[in-house]
Amino acid sequence: MQRLVSTRNFAFGYTLESAQPLTFYSDYAIGGGLLTFPYQKSIVSLRYRGDNKSGSFYLERSTGKSVFGREEASYLFRLGDDMERIYESISTDAFMIAAIEKYRGLRLTRNDPWVTTLTFIISQFNNIKRIRRIVKLLIERYGTDINDSSGMPVGKGFPDMETLSRLSVKELMECGTGFRAGYIKEASRYFTENVDLYKLEGKSYSMIKDALIGARGIGDKVADIIALMGYGKLEAFPIDTWIKRTVEKVYFNGHGKTVKEIHRFADERWGELAGYAQQYLYWHGMHSL
Image (tube, rainbow, N blue to C red):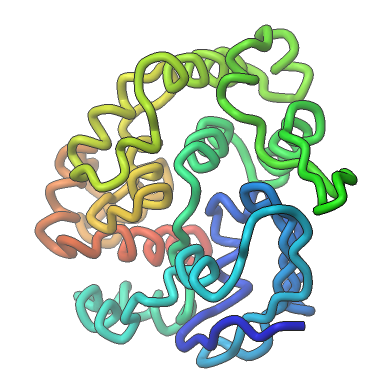
């Protein structure tokens, strides 16, 4: 077992269970600190040893043709983020301070743009258990084959967008996608034929969001999630029902606000770190309000 990288302010359990892409497609055992997931052309198993203050990631196994080492682990879990600076910056009020104290070490992750897009199209009006079941079925039936160095199959990776664009709505619905089947098919076609998700890397937050919203099934919320977790745009502030309710209750005495008004509020209050603020608000609000 190879030690990859040490961590500070990293909560393995909170991060994996906080409705991010890894939540939806990896296999994990919080108590044992074990995480197994497809990564490009490999199946990777990581072990986390430590607590929410400090610890280390170890590579138990990586089978396939893609390298997964210190750099990849640091990228995926955003281990370069200065969490103390982030906490200091977003600790603007008692509710946020309580959220940080309770869920300290909860990290945003940085994921493949297509993986993020597909999982969050599926996440709409859905719960974590059902999302995981749908994603696992799509991988099982239509995922790309992952082979070891001798050419033997070791698992399946995410289905690529071209493959999904060729499927019928019925075939997609057989994976439990429901009304989302049409969105998946159309988004797969859109990003195959019109917008290369990987060429959006390095673009501004507003340019990325505008490009994403052109696809059917991707509205303001999902575009912000993809910008945040697929492209690392920390100024993105995804607004779903929970966040809207939490912001209205905590900051506006329960008075209703439009999505546009909440975006403006988040930008003025947390600015370039609004994405981190959102994650803590979401998790604390869902469990305390």
